[in-house]
Length: 542
Image 1 (cartoon, rainbow, N blue to C red):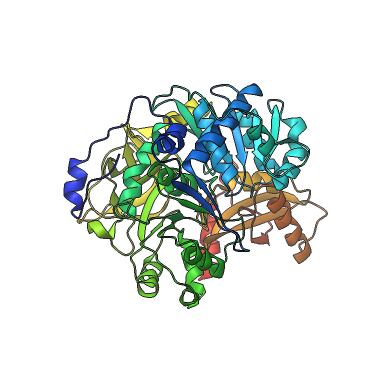
Image 2 (cartoon, one colour):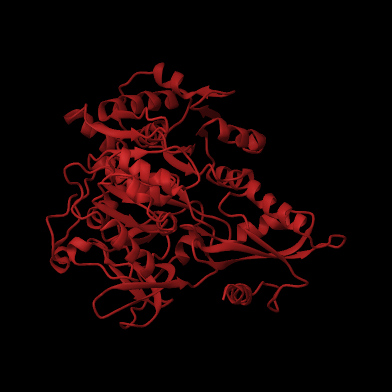
């Protein structure tokens, strides 16, 4: 699963062929296989602000994950059960992922950003049996645990009224017989952002990791090379942090740097990259823009970056050019979504780099611009990005939602819902969504969940959420609210409504702007015409 040496994209794309073992297991591939060869090889490093950084090797990862797997089995967790991970970047997060895959259970990563309503929906929909979290996550789980009948156990990595992670690991054998799994056996469920209706659980097989290797090697230009080391500020609970950085790096024997959860800070990011000797970074466009806003901060640190990859929203020419001018390197933009990730990429080393474009199809993936019926469109014509099925990174389906899964495909193509066009050179340029998704700071946010939460506030009669253009975050969430009788518009009420959503859904989904209106534009069937509101928000920005 390694791309050959390359400098010509066309040859590489034409000659690539998949070779995924029939007995592939993610947990074994990212820990035991390396531990058998080089147990002392460093796989994880953790940045600590006080300078007392930590490290873990593959031998330790193999043994601790085996102990945790044995502990989970002793608690009654079986193959196919869903185990939720509500954790920051940490060694415990990696140990938990590996243990779950070794068991043949299904990992359900969840972001600590989520509020109680968002957590309840995802845990209940997935039927999670266990939650592994920290003290912060426990405060949220405690508020909803009595509404989660399938949740048997809560494990904490830092104390509290729960089973203690370290005690479980210490009490069980460091030897575990890895479950026999094939590429299509379920391993991982990541919830979508809910762009059309409520969020859906995208279920992936063990093959999803193998499917990400060509993209990782393409975007990071011959990855791995001597001295490579990976860091991303992206949460490992998202497909970007987990599958664009953490798991592929571990599979290829490259150390991954973790860092404490924090609001992104340019100075800290530069310090991490310099102090930890990061060679390969996955930095979403919003974070790159925040680095740019920091001016010459990068000159304070001795950086030794070899590659920067970026995805999650459109990078844009200005940010592309700034990275080249300030950091002396070409950022390689790539593209994917939760259901089918890392299928388009740039790679300057392979001659695939163009400001404003997201790249060309990654070797191993057949990508085209198609219409809604799955018919390929001519060069230059706008349509949806489509990915030909089957594909190793393609999801197995939406959890307990066959109808939604079927609607995702047309004429053998997975329809992403993202609009783009392809030029004569084969470069694909992203144009936007054909639905109402909001792209903010690299997160794809569906309005339905926000509007549902807004409607729960006693002052809100009707509400609509749209994306308003923003120079740093791409878009911010803006809510248009019709008040219930007896309530009057005020700055205090707007702040209260913002806080209502922030605490119940997520710290990245709440509306940064709330505007009170007398009525919302509606269709004859009572549906909000968000397009009108988007145009209004865009006009405000202009």
